[in-house]
Image (cartoon, rainbow over all chains, first blue to last red):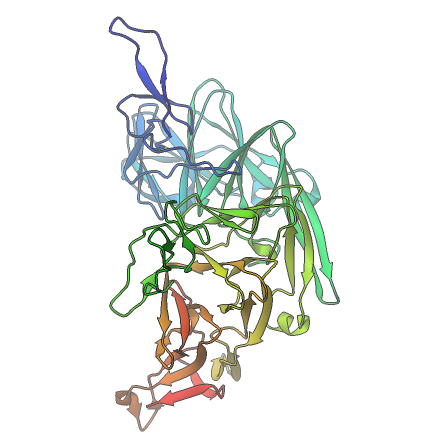
Length: 282
Length: 306
């Protein structure tokens, strides 16, 4: 995971060594064991499969992540918890069903969302909650899986499967995009909307929860991959998604339709290895 | 898989304790099944050996193709198919594939019975060249079972992930069932319960060796039964067995649980497995359906013990 590079203005004492995180590209102190922005271990090799999928970094238990002046600690490994120590005036937002516990002093408010009626129809949370520091609050989702920490640099747009986001810092813009095409809605296995997270000028933090293990792959311009729709977790907004249905038949009783999402680059695609099959119900 | 399997001659050879495959032992993982080399054999005093799951990113070969295991909670089998090589699978385990992989339907005999039993009626097959990946939607282990020529294993239904084309697929009725009387509202009805499922999958390598991959929920433990040796297991915990192992349902009634008013109030439902051969169980298993309901009938392959 580590890649020691030399950069920055050289002080009188000599060049400053930095370790660049291979997951989020954050710069870290030479002595750091894990990335201060995303918590990825810096002392292990980058796990990339032969086919080009990179494993989301397995956060070590009690790894600490910094955003603004607040911190997040990842606790546990099988169903990990994100425990936040919010600094005075800093805030995060989240869907209320992922909240695990909080200190009484942490006030909760709601985020004003547009298109509330559409969200209600689509089964998306009508209200997104906001917690403001100072104080501690913790989040987890109800399944074996991984926390995916995605520090968002300024000017990024990320589309996320609905209900998969755990929390985002207040500096990250939140909206939702309608999945285009009735066919994609009916057979894409993701409902009508995807969450969209956008950063303008400031850096932000987004934490997702993926079922099972999470893998990321960067597609080149025009490169395509077919993915089980239930496994889709996130993508850069530049990546297009189109559901293709293949009818496989054989004999009198044999026959079924198989839907696959064709993802076309350029950009990142994240998938989860445990998923629900919306077509078959199993 | 049997920790006591004989070593194969040369001092430089390494016999995999899991699949019996022989290699030079210099790699990180077994070239036949991907199990870690030199893994300590964790054998309980009761002779169950814990199957060491493949290390993350373990790679192993089959034919001209290869497979890489990725992840650990819900591992993925990432298969690189060579030109002319093929695998078949139940379509719901497909995770992703490259657009150039050719996918088609593979018909199965006995489709109507399979449909009634809730088993997949059509298998999907994929042909190389290209990459295709599989995973199942439960935390657990992916097991690679290399089958030598003539070898046959029986696998519990719905646990199959994929097999190479050289492996023949068949299925058979488990004949493990019992009938219970249950009350729903004001109605009393009789229901047949199949704790192993109505059918079991059977995989054979008739002419050439092949690779079979199955998925287990939780951890996997395996042991080898000697001829005539028996073991009682929870029916829903069975993962696979050699076809030479016989299965029989077994009811056990603790003698203290008899009452003149209500009869036998306590009962355990077991699956008895008789050697010779390997049996494997998984640690995360669902409860036996209607285990405490009144039993009104059972399969002939059943023994009662009071």
